[in-house]
Length: 217
Image (cartoon, rainbow, N blue to C red; front, side, top):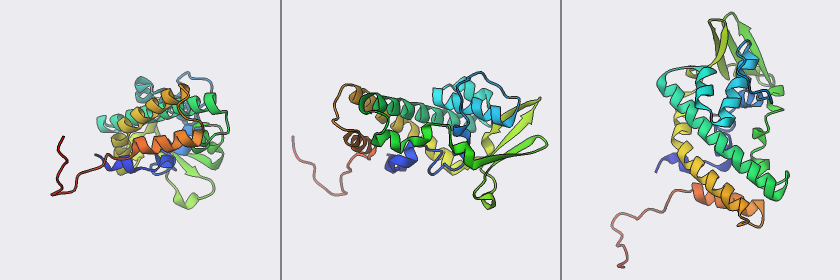
C-alpha cells in the first residue's frame, strides 16, 4: 500500500493546505459563488481553478491550468480528493451541525478567509502567489498568461507533493464517500466518532510478518 495511507487527517483534508499545502491555501480560498470560468486576471483564474477542484471538474481544471499530462493527472487527483472531502464535510454539517470535529478539521474547505493571508504579485505574464506574513518564503504557486488568459502553472508546484496527492486520492475518495454515507445513515453518534472512523479507514491494512504462520481455516 502507498505510504500516503498514513497521512494524518489534516494533510488529507487539504492535500494542499497541510503538506502540499501552503501553496494551495490561497488558490482554494479564492473560490466564489460565481462558477463561470473567468480567466481575465490571476485572481479570477484562481477562482476558476478552485471551483473546478471543489467540483471535481476535470474539464474545468484543465481550462484553468497549464501543465504536462502528468501535472494534469495530479491536479485531477487533487480534485477527486477535495470534492470527496467537501462532501464529507457537508454530510457532517447536516448531521452534527456546523461546529463539529470534521468540519473544524476541514475548515479550509470554507474558502473565504485564507486569501487574506496571501498576495498576488504580477510581473509581465507571470503572477506569483506569496504569503503576506512570510514573504521570505516567496513562491507558493505561479500563474502564467497565454493568449490573454491567466492559468495556474501546475509545473510550479512541488512534484513530490503532487505525486503524494495523486497516490492518496483514490484512498481518500473511497474513505470519505463511505464515511459520508455512514454519517447520513446515523451510524456514528458524534462527529468525533466519525473522525476516528475516517482515520481507521485511512490506515494501511495489517501485514503479516515474514515467517509468520497464518492460522488454518
